[in-house]
Length: 102
Image (tube, rainbow, N blue to C red):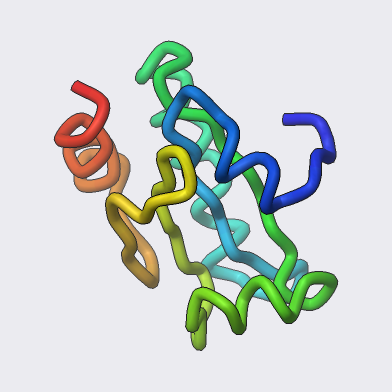
């Protein structure tokens, strides 16, 4: 996704947007990257992935009370549909997403 402003993306997107709160030094975040990409690909455009570096955007992390990473929040038109922190399997993440974008 192009580097659009975070607020704009989560409020104006017609599709659901899965925001990945991450940092470059975070091992589990890197482990999750291929899983996130696979899940988004499998959902066939129903969910967009937006990666938010918490070191570069501390105010966004604070606004959504993200205290540990990786942390994922699914937004649709500015509303939080789902959120979860920590490592997830592809199966778990896919099932969670399908519940919202089926």
